[in-house]
Every structure is written in C-alpha cells, then in structure tokens.
Length: 463
Image (cartoon, rainbow, N blue to C red; front, side, top):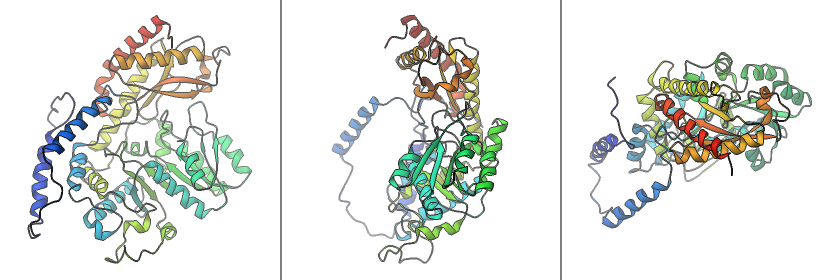
C-alpha cells in the first residue's frame, strides 16, 4: 500500500469522488421530468456556509492526533462521502417506501456486525446511538423479566441508571475491583438476594476502558438465570483486535453467549454521529415490537425496520455510510479495519509504558483497550488532583488536548500510604487514543505532556 499523503488537517479527495458519484446518482433518474427546486444554493447560502466554517474554529481539532481527549474519531472519508451523497435523497429507514435501498443496506450492515459477534441468526437495527440502543435492550429485558432489578457496575455508563428511570425499572450499581471491572463477588452476593432480571456487562467502560469478566458473569447466569446484556458501545469492535491481554481476550471470546449487544459504529466504526446498533441473539423478541400502522407498512410484505425499532424516523444516510465503510473495510480478524484497532491499542500500551517509567506520573492500571488514565505523583490525592487539572490546562495551551476523569481512590491502592487517600476520588488525566495515527504521535504527545507537567510542578499546581 502506497504511503499516505501528508495533510495539515482536513481531507479533500473525497469531495471530488462525491461530485462524480452525485453525477451517477442523478443519471439514474433521467426519466424523471425536470422541475425547478424551491430552494437553491446561491451566494447568500454560500455566505452562511462560510460563517459556519468560521464558527467551527471554536472547536478543538478533533481530527488531529494531538486531540487525544474524548471519544471523538473522524469518520472514514468514504463514510462521510456516502452519508453526504445520501442527503440528496434523505431516506427514512422507518418504512420501505421511504428507504428501499438504505433499508436493505442497514439489514446487510447489521448482519455483518452480528456475524462479527458470532451470530448467524439475530434481530437488530441501527439507532441514534448507544443510549437509545441500551434503552431498547433494557426495555426488552423488562418485558422478559418484569418487576425485576437491573444491575451494572459503578464504572458502567451513567445512561443505564438514567434509562432505568425512564423505563420505571429498579436499578443498582455494584462495586468494581481495583482494575475497574465489575466485582464478581459483589454481584454474586446481590444475586443471592433475588429479583435481578438483567445484568449489564460493560466491554470497554467509558472512563478507563475496563472490560468486565464475561466468563465469570456467564457462569453466574447459568446458576441464577438472569438476562445478560453487553454494553460494548465503545469497545465492541476490539473483538477483532489481535493484541488484547489474555483476560480481555477471554471476555471477547465469549461475547456470542450473551443475550444482547450494543455497539456504536459512530465510535470505533468510523461513522458520523449518530449511528448506534443493538443486536439480539434471539430473533423472537421481535414480537415485543409488534404494532399496527395503517398508513406506514402497506407497500411491501417484507420486514420494515420500523417494525423492529422503538424509534420511528431514522436516517437512512447512517445505514448507507456504514454499509459503504464495511464494504471497503470488512469486519474480519487480520483485515485493514482490525489493523487500525490494533494500532490504537498499541498506542495506548506505548503511552502507558512511558508513564509507568516516569516518576512524575501514577498510572493506576494498564489499559485493556485504548484508554490510558494517570495522575501526577504527589503526597496526597487532593494535591495530585490539583496538579492533574493544572497539567490539563497547560497541555491544552501547548496544543495537546486531553480529558479529565474522577476515579475512586482505591484504584491507587498500590500507593500504600493512608495519608495519600485524603479524599474518595482522584482527578486523573485521560487519553483516548482512538486514531490509528496516534501510534506515530506518542513521542510528541509524551513530550508535550512532559513540558506541561514540568510547568505545573514548577507553579505548584495552583488553581
């Protein structure tokens, strides 16, 4: 494969390809009579577009490797172009008469995600994002096991507790071990009390990227009979990576045994927001979605996606972007898509190794996926937190964009000194190395981080 061209920021080759694809799309409707569109793109519209470009300068350069903070990954150029092309049609993947082509693409794309999980049969669809996808999974769980409690770990995404409130479901958050994984003993004790209907296993927590011990949870499911849902919104695609640790690999290798899975293509799947996906192992749960619509589903006896989704109108463009990307980059072990995930994981390990060997920093745990967390060494957790916030600000001034997160102080048990734990949580720096390019930028990231830290230490980390 030829070396990629160097660019300062924003890729443009896809614009030329999009123009050619638009000509081909237009040619396919040559039998349609000419008409005068009510809205045109004139000089006034162009001026507004230039205003938009100026306004976007207020954002960070999310596309650049020096942005290593939140979970923001640029869409693949093909995904962006295919999504844009679809906007001239604006299909609605609720009913087939509003989205024949994109509905078929959605079914194919979701089927490929299901095969990646290990399911030849499934029921699933795209949705606005992980929140809506998890809502559907918990809703189905409540229909199968009514009047029961849903449990997740304290490091699970906050959306599970909020969704449970929306659905009027009982919810409990269980403790984590020092690696940020669900405490299996705590779960077992909770299960002995009864009334647990759904357990949420997180494969890639948002704060630190920890992966709940799925083999242990499956063993408990065999004993207690709960429904097991995997929230893999962020980490699901790492199923394809070839450089996971043994315990993490063991969890992913058992993913096909859970009852439902959520994966967000708009995270590691190279898609624009919003593109989430929920997949169920048992297709018969589609009966819970059954409803009548006398004005929607009359044009075809085939399955309309609105018949297996809580959402109604949904962008067909999201399905088209995903289908095109998976056509170019199939979801296979050892392929180009999987290679990109491996590079993100390798970047995280490289940064962790540098932090671990640097006396200025305290990384509490090795990354399981591509998220690295650490704080600044100090006599107390409070002082460490103040320094971390100072490094965060100074790093941004120097052009490196990180994130912050609050972690339980017990994640730092190895510090050993009771005096260090002067508060319950520690403010940590956090880096999500989602871009494959991050692997080539680790030395630059570490260099800027070092300068920012020296500056913060010299200033005393004052707030």
